[in-house]
Length: 360
Ligand SMILES: Nc1ncnc2c1ncn2[C@@H]1O[C@H](COP(=O)(O)OS(=O)(=O)O)[C@@H](OP(=O)(O)O)[C@H]1O
Image 1 (cartoon, rainbow, N blue to C red):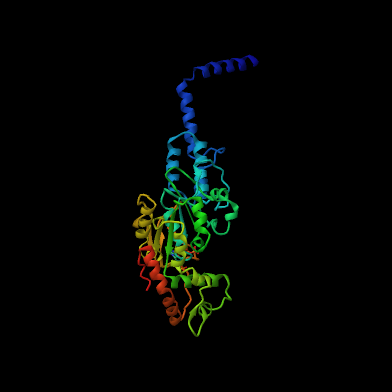
Image 2: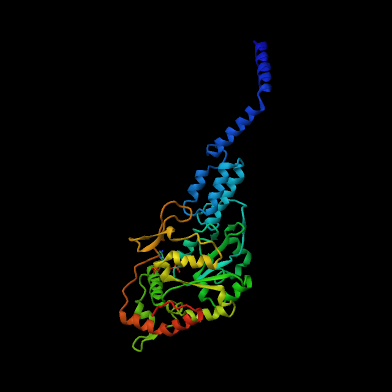
């Protein structure tokens, strides 16, 4: 019995030694193929990654997936994929920490600095469809609220980018923050600045609508907008009014940046012709015009253009409920007074920017 076992072992040993090298290679190849199909228990599954990325998948992920199909180095590429997920999620927007080392965190080369309620979120989401744009999801508020945290804190918030990709963020309050231009210039005076502007009257109503959503007991618009109601004097200390005084804010920025650093985007045209406005932005950023008409459709229920395929999703998506709210009715004479107040300021802004937005 013992001898027969020994004989068997000896025979199988000899047999094994005769196994051709090519057969071993075939086994290795089959194993790698098995893993790449997502069945290796020890390796993270690509399908899991896809679920994590359901909201934001950068264009570069497709390239990484392609590499996953054609190369055998599974773990390196899975970690690259994880990195892209984290970057796209604005360094943890999904709440799922993913470790990675792919690309590098850079200061933004372009920032959407304003204006509040202008359509800044729509613009950023449209730009994120571009494979060469990487952006922080949340508003960093570095140059207004968190400047004391230092530049490294700010840089760390940024998604990792590959060479040739543009890092972006949007914080609409920068446009009205006195210190923001000098602070931003101290970081990089060549930063490209994008300002989405919207008719200041509608913008003020939009701003008021948002505040009222948060504080339902808020006084009426007409109570807040006047310093002296009977004389029709507008209260410029009310932020909903002050933010729309674009010429004044631009003047502050022009102390530190040349006009050529700015691109003014029409908030109205961003709704009526999103591809046209995004086209201008892509040119300004020196990007190939990839985001085009074919990326948008008009959603009748929402009443706004939506993305057919947002970054990271194969399903159409509109912006959330806080974008495109129904505005309350404001008496026409109140709106008229506000329009008159803004008229000279708008004209000054048209002169300064070299663009007539046709608000009056
Ligand atoms: N495609 C699309 N979908 C939804 N909403 C759109 C879109 N394009 C522009 N807008 C307008 O964006 C307004 C909100 O502006 P912001 O994103 O700059 O607001 S915020 O400052 O970040 O709070 C928001 O203002 P309200 O309509 O007053 O809600 C919209 O009018």
